[in-house]
Amino acid sequence: MRALHVITRPVAPPGERQVLAVPEALRGLREHPWEGPYPSLELLQTVPPGYQERASGPWQELRSVWALHNTDVNQHVNVHEYLMSMENHFARMLFGANLPLARHRIARTDILFRKPFFLGDAHAIRARLFSDGRHTLLLGGLHRVEPEGGLEPRPSVCARMEGELEEAAD
Image (cartoon, rainbow, N blue to C red; front, side):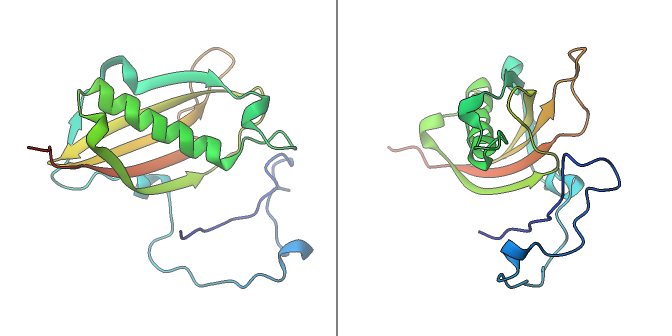
């Protein structure tokens, strides 16, 4: 795993969210230089040449709400909930596209956390599915549901999952 962690104060008022000094509890960690392009929504949502979008019908979106069992002691949604939600959504999308779930595995996940969710937050998972031969690609995000029922246009959590279909047994 390679991770880039940007520390912020997500519930602080605008202008006070940036953390400028390393917190005491993290001072023992060593900083490593980041190699490669800085992760961004645009980078994660890039479709490589040769990949074609696969229709998945109504399986493209799922709405839900975060409950107590999805959160930690501070009522922040746990990281593993985002990952499991996207893995499960990959399966729904494959199902909607009539691709064989039993032969599919996720080989790589890139995930970008923009804005955390909390207990009681309504959200929707939206994604697009692509394939190139045996290779699959899910570009998805967890979006906040606005009070009127629409979705915030930018995802709070963005994921890129690359997978592959094993050869069919003879």
